Image (cartoon, rainbow, N blue to C red):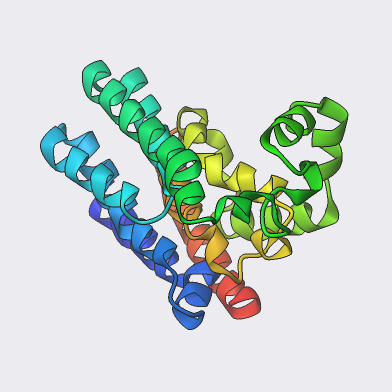
Length: 239
């Protein structure tokens, strides 16, 4: 990014209504993941793999579901940057995820967390039922294409003028967005709560990649101006 675009993206990030809601809501550990995500990608782009791995470990220390974000980093790194580092991060993420859900949760008697009303209760009462219903196309479509998810998606993507959809290379980082769409917990379908914290950095990352598709100088001036306007409007009406 040139200085102009860097300043624009810094401004619209701070104007994002979800960021404002995170600042006003009670403290949740997911918010810590936002700067760690940004620094992780910065170090990855600059091939500073030691610092990248340190920040991946820091991400894994936040909360169990953040392992899925780290898994996304690992897959992206394997495909586009460094296969050895990417594979290492994938292994770290898988170990962290499964040890949380199948060792530490049962150890502290909190394994019912994933089955209660806050997560995937509408898909079943045990892992087999949940997986079976999640891979059922008709059931999956019924739970994804809802009015709540439509409103949620609009509020996430509209301030960014839907630029993220122009960056399929980084779709892998939308894993938490997909999980929120599938979740039984109504708060996960709202930008007003911390459940969207892990989605925000991936949307801005995708927007930068999406904007890079344009080469025309006039377009590269107009779109950032429109981003500023849309972000201010979103902040006024959604924050």
